[in-house]
Image 1 (spheres, rainbow, N blue to C red):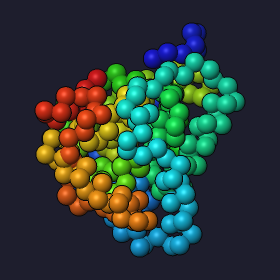
Image 2 (cartoon, rainbow, N blue to C red):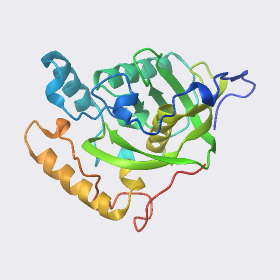
Image 3 (spheres, helix red, strand yellow):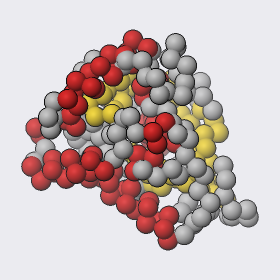
Length: 254
């Protein structure tokens, strides 16, 4: 993690027990922003009112989609903690909310910066992590359905550690340490992947990746439907732009 020397270190006091960890609950049920999934994929877009649906379409049009090279590049550490960084973070939060997402990484907004935002429910405040680094994860894993605003319509069952510890910086450069589990841990790990050029396609077996990419292409070919089409089958065709070995599933590590 890069950052300014001599910043005050702050430890987030919340313990792992404070975060819901019901492994029988889907991400859509756990997130109190229905009808959502991780990063905001929709199962039933007809449930949205016209104004919300239009706002979401406009937001998705601003989010970098699968095939954009920035989604396959490792983001650059943030070195300047200034008003411009705060402006970028606020714009990302607004974009995430308009897209009905619960997380967004800077590369998805076209910025090669190690910066992510998330808000797991409407009652909590949006969080901003600058130069985040995963320093520990539990041995216990869980599988849950994930979607991605950069992969419209794709939903995949992804295995990740149940609990994590992350060190990062705030917008003023102050160092923080964050422990999370359950949905919050999953969202953070998902966005950390984006900062390293990794997509959920890379965290499933090759046959699922192949099927997902095939369905994604078909969905995007349907006029005006791509952003709201859901692939009920976890999926994915071989992804030649993936930075990982595609012969086996990718597992999360520290």
